[in-house]
Image 1 (cartoon, rainbow over the protein chains, first blue to last red):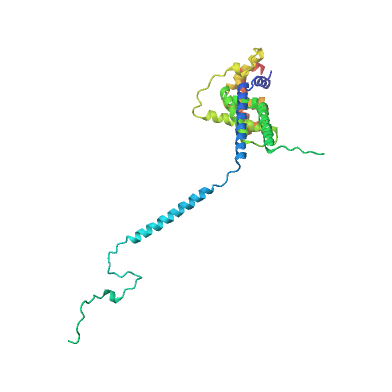
Image 2: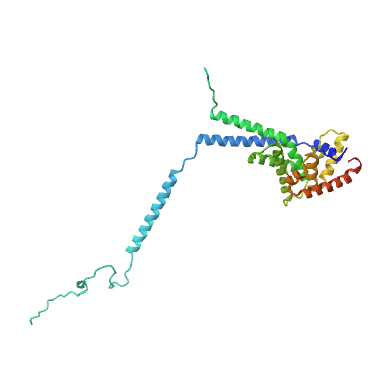
Length: 111
Length: 179
């Protein structure tokens, strides 16, 4: 008997164990079932709709941020301390009469 | 009157699933020995071969490969099995190797032929890994040297050398007279 025949005879006696094959088939069957179940669930539920509520949350959050910004700006403006009250504020018109001291008694010019 | 009976989508899906399942089982039945023998030859351990067999078939059904013909499918399975075996042996924890249970591995009939087969198999599995893969693919699966090089990812010259050295070792182990 030559080497090739010997090796072929030897390997012909080797077979995958039946219990391992059975386990493998069971595993494949379970995977098939799981896939089928997923498919049925998907078909029953239909394709997932886009979540509209999420957009509302985004819009509400944006509005809140804007409102917070406006409130902060208003608060800063109202609590501003003028360290130099005499200084004319740029952009405002100051009249001369505003700065003249008021006279309480009229002076007699003719005397 | 002509009546047309059409399956509902659910029935069609069920039939398709049953067909796929039958196909899967047919593939396992057809190639289980090929994958097991290849894995056994690569790892030299029947327990690892069983694990690898499961891994290879799961990979087969998960990746849904497309084959041109049966030879292509067989080649794919052998290549994946060889790679899975090599990866397993490369891992750091691959130190403990259980002894082969020859009663489980080879058919139980106690004849001179099975004894001789066990001796030959023992001699082949005791060769270094790359030698025994080359021997198995060349002598049992009857692949050409080029095909073996493709499956194992080595060169044709290397495969030829491995085969030559493996033959010499086997002759020494089995006694050169009858081989």
